[in-house]
Image 1 (cartoon, each protein chain N blue to C red):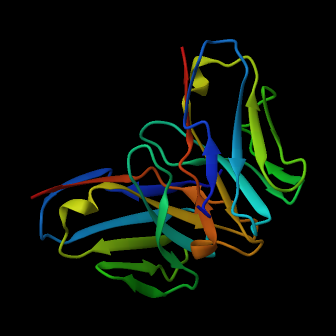
Image 2 (tube, rainbow over the protein chains, first blue to last red):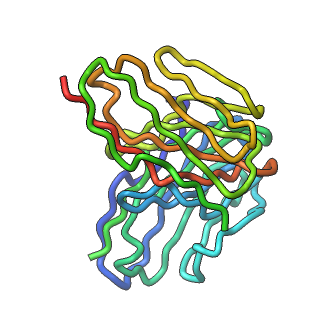
Length: 115
Length: 111
C-alpha cells in the first residue's frame, strides 16, 4: 500500500488522558499536513511540515496539541489533557512541495472519542 | 479568516437526475478542488482546477473555476447510487498546500 497510513483508526480515551496519533506519508512526499474534522463540517487545517520543519500552525492548535516529524518521514500528533471538545476525526495528508490536486493525498483518519 | 460557503447543504435526488453544487468565497483562490468523502474515510480528490475560467470534466463530473477566482461549481450528470456521499470544495491560496474546505454537501440518491 503506497497511500497515506494513519494509526490508530479509532481511539477512545477518558477526559484528561494524553493521546498520540501517527501518520506515515507517501514515501516521496516531503510535505505533511494535519487536519481536524468534526461531524457535519469540512476538514480544518491544523499544521504542516516540509521535511522535518514545522512551517505553519493554525490558531486551532492550542498549547495542548503538539506535532512532530523528527526525521522528515512519519509524523505524530499528541493531544495532552484531552477534553470532550477534542472529539473529532484527525486527518493526515501528504504532498510534494508544489503538490495539490493529484499530488495531495489524504489518509483515512483517526477518529478520537473523548468520554 | 478565509471561509468557503458551500451550497446546498444537502440534496436528495432520484437516480438519473443531474446535480449541481457550488462554493463561494470572499477571498481569491489560485486553486479549487472538489473532494468526495465516504463515512469513516478521508476525502478523495475528484477534480482539480488551476486557472480562472477553467472547465474540467472527470467522467460524469464537471467542475469550473469561476472567473472572479472566488467561486466554483461541481455538476454530476445522470446520478447513480454510488454517488452517495459528502462532497467538499476546497481552495488554496499561495503555495503552502494548506487547503480551506467548505462545509460539505451531503448527496443522497434514491434508486
